[in-house]
Length: 359
Image (cartoon, rainbow, N blue to C red; front, side, top):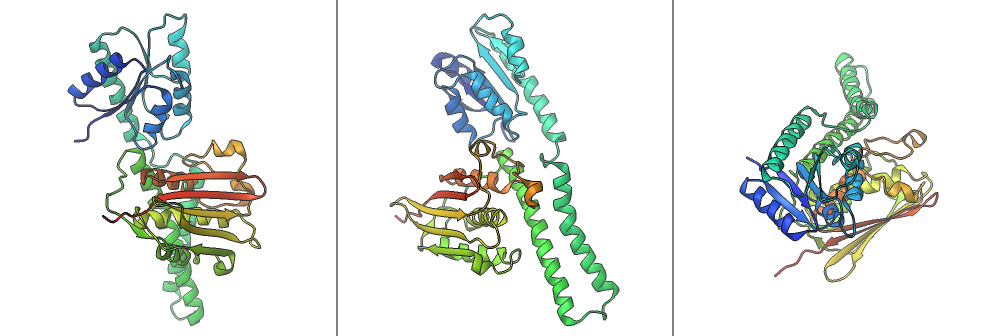
């Protein structure tokens, strides 16, 4: 049985360690941080079932940390308990209005803390069990499921109903349409399941996984060619051979999603460039350049699960999960991703991934 996970953030060592030891004894899985910034670093790769956070801390205080968590779709429903030694008028009301679930004033009784934790986690479990798998726009979700599904069903129906009415080339077109729609539907469902696994801490990167970057890229181009005609003329690539410490499946996902976005947002007469080279003895660098609409500075801060930019204007497909999930996989794989905004000029994405080491 999985242990319930609790993140404890407090700059006072004695309080932080006392709460931590108490919760470990009560069979909770815990992480600790001395300020909100370190707490955010932990949340990059570990999602708790509850957060206990002091208010007054250096570097990043509890208010600032809670606001960031509250604005994140995948974190906003996590129960949040504020701790404080301050005796400020209406402080409890202020904390609750800002999205906190409860409030404890130091010093507090351990029994009160444990009872509050148990109540909030039980409530959180009920919310998780009744929440829809996908948290984005329901109209977009229906479109992404129904469009390829209708194409598959419609094509099969015609082939069954009129088995001798179509020329061989026409029948081949139906098969091709079925394949393309099936791939699109399959990828959509894979992304939704992956998002759920990341949210529930069920996504892990296995030690020892590796992939050869050039062969993985060739497979990505092959799959992307189903969606884009003349792809070989639109994508300019150059890769130095190297084995990376990331599974072929995960590297394939990252390259497919980021290239798909680059092509989707670039005019058809503009090329997309991707290259890969050794960055140093430890990391391999992948760079992707497109000449599409680009990101605005403020949009980079909004990259999240199910967030899409200019969907209606650009008639874009998808659920807005690709970039978010790619970032999550890269960070889980001990890599780094940076996105340089060039509004109305395109986007530049830099990725650093660990190189496979042989002892």
